[in-house]
Length: 415
Image 1 (cartoon, rainbow, N blue to C red):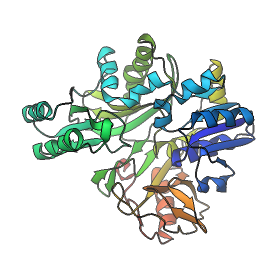
Image 2 (image 1 turned 120 degrees about the vertical axis):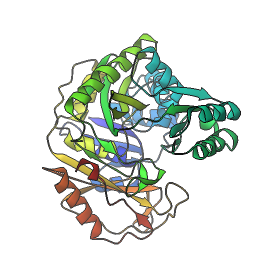
Image 3 (image 1 turned 180 degrees about the vertical axis):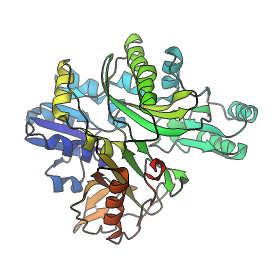
Image 4 (image 1 turned 90 degrees about the horizontal axis):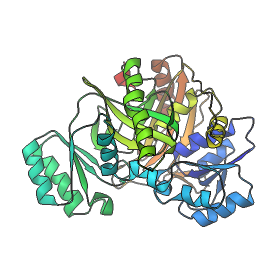
């Protein structure tokens, strides 16, 4: 098989690498990809993910068997609709179904309608009304930009002042542009967070093993929210009964609800959950693989990813099995991320027999240089999480990372 992966980050590197490890797959193209992927034999295609016409032309010329969409923006731009209209096979939700991620309000309405457990909320476009609601509710409280904000449009406000500042940023100062023209204000939920992803075809749901992501920039969960600074799987502090409850009360009703409202979902459904005393509750839905969760979940997949997707596209029942190994990944980010960051730094030659590297924000200039906020992720697998953690940090400590930083406590919550 020849497969095309859309996207250019660490998530797409992990997906493409997993697909290429399959004996039934001869070639994996990645558009636009990044030069770090070439180290694993992935073929980079210099076509932007928003140029649907060129991507369709490329897929036809190369006789690509099917295409996999990594990031959310092409999904919300209707890439699946366009490929299908051109008679091409593609795995991901159509534009209307991708709204489960594209609009927090859309997702909340789906949850309320289908009795999916989530935080109480209100939506606002008017600053004064939103401020009055915050003053009435008190803090801590959660402020979310309604649209996409690259994982940075969520503020957990510890004080009323923080909440009002977040509302001002979004509704008055347009910090997130159109994405923040409407906000969703939610009750604060206490508990451990975990990510539950699933392969979905209409009402059929095939859950993956869970992971836990670390959103805050610095050790001890301090600093601003990022797209994710590291992840690990399994998550031993989340009981199996809680995961099963989430499948039954969140994933299955969400898939069924999407079909019933005329926006059936096919692709990867991601539920960001919090384990509360009352059971799992949804923080957010995404319409694709998470980053960095993908980089720790896919190494635990024993079955062929290419076969699973081929069978789902045919409407067949895939057989899916997972290994019991522990996986942990740490993101190396550019100094200043998630704000303004330094780029163009030459990356050290990083080779480790114990770890895998997934590249994200990199470019080629007499070697690999940093070219994004999250530059790469180093991942290791072992019998236990402690061993996996040890492997990653030992490898990271062996090299100098100029103008780059990483967290030193990924996985500690599991211990």
